[in-house]
Amino acid sequence: MFGRMHLRQQVVVSICLVHLITLALTTTILIVNARDAVRLEIDAGAKSARALVLSTLGYALQQSPPSEVLPYLAETLVEPRHVDIALLDARRGVLPLRKMTRTEERTSVPGWFVRLATPAPRETRIPIESNGVLHGYVSMTAAPGDEIAEVWQDVSSMFWIVAGTALVSVLVMVALVNRALLPLDALRSALGQLRRGNHAIRLGRSTSLDLIPIFDGFDSLSEALDAAETDRARLNRRIVELGDAERRSIAMELHDEFGPCLFGLKVKASAIARKAETTKDTALAEDAAAIQSIVAQIQASNSRLLTTLRPMAIGQLPLTDALLDLFEAFRKTHPDIDWSVNLPDALPKTREITDLTVYRFFQEGVTNALRHGKPTRVMVSLSEEETGAGPVLHLCVEDDGLGMSDERNEGRGLTAMRDRIRAVGGQLSIDAADGWGTKLQSSLPLLTSDVPLSDLRDAS
Ligand SMILES: Nc1ncnc2c1ncn2[C@@H]1O[C@H](COP(=O)(O)OP(=O)(O)OP(=O)(O)O)[C@@H](O)[C@H]1O
Ligand SMILES: [Mg+2]
Image 1 (tube, rainbow, N blue to C red):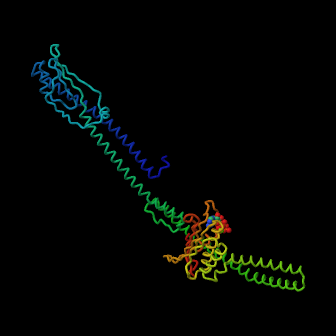
Image 2: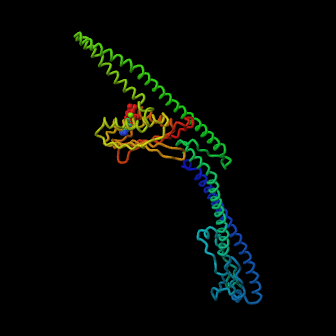
């Protein structure tokens, strides 16, 4: 249990335990010493009382007959400390002392302490007799009450001094431990930020000598992570750019080489078809028709492939126009859906990598909504915001469909989207839409043609 406590609690519990043990030992020693002190004092008191009584008795016997000695003692004897004197006269009974010195005002002492400190009761009797006749006797019994009250005052003051010192030292220790552990709180929060991707976090120099190597180690680690993350982002961007360039060159190849060849094939097949018609060669006419149909199929899939590899509009039209074309195409294939399209009237001339990223975001986001969500409404929006770090584009695709299941696995679509967005220094978030459905959002810097790509940082 102790092992599972925080260091702060361990220190406090340990110090409290040590002080409690010290306090218990001190109290025991104080009580034992008090007991001895009471016994010694009572013994001394008994001796001096006995001497006092004997000397007063000797003097009284000179002054008066033995039968009158006890009344004489009652008049003259002063009761000493720590001893109760009783005069028992055979004829007159108990005679009270006239000169009582003890006051009855006493501090209240707890019963357990009185029981512990009171020595065994002891009575001494001095008989007064003459010619074989007992006139009475003087009885002396120990009266430790005053002494016990005095000792109790010492013991209790000592106890509170020790207890107060212990309390102060615990408080001082807790304050010191808290102060010493304060930098660890900073370290814990910095580690949390590092885990959440804030690689710019640095702790600086610790005020605690013991923690300087740990803080320095943390800063070196976050610097290394920062550098690695910058490299990763640069590499990621490079991969996306190379992929785009590769696709662009394949699309060009397909367009410039396949296109004319297919057109040539189509023309030749039409010529053969015309010839077959004039020669009434039905077999040749059928073959020519088959070639024409195959060519048409290849042309259709070539055109689809071209669009997938590189949307024709990108690079040709402004981004907003290319997006309007895209949404128009979706609207035509899905007329039952309630579309809401919110685009800015115009955007500054953006970099091609940004255009492609925005276009692919909407293309994949809307395709996913239609394919997986079965929605009745799809809302798309694009807006521009001026921030301290430059203009930013906010992208959103929201549907009222089935929503993402918790066990979904990201396919190539979302993974490629995230990579693209990261490559341009943006962020992607996928949430449940208000009510139900899915809300796909992204923010990315609006890169105009004059921003060097090397300036980009991965902000995700
Ligand atoms: N709008 C949406 N509504 C409901 N589920 C969605 C939505 N978007 C994505 N999903 C879920 O997320 C999964 C991953 O989507 P992702 O686009 O990565 O892959 P995919 O669409 O299945 O395949 P592809 O690689 O062809 O895009 C989907 O299979 C689907 O279960
Ligand atoms: Mg998909």
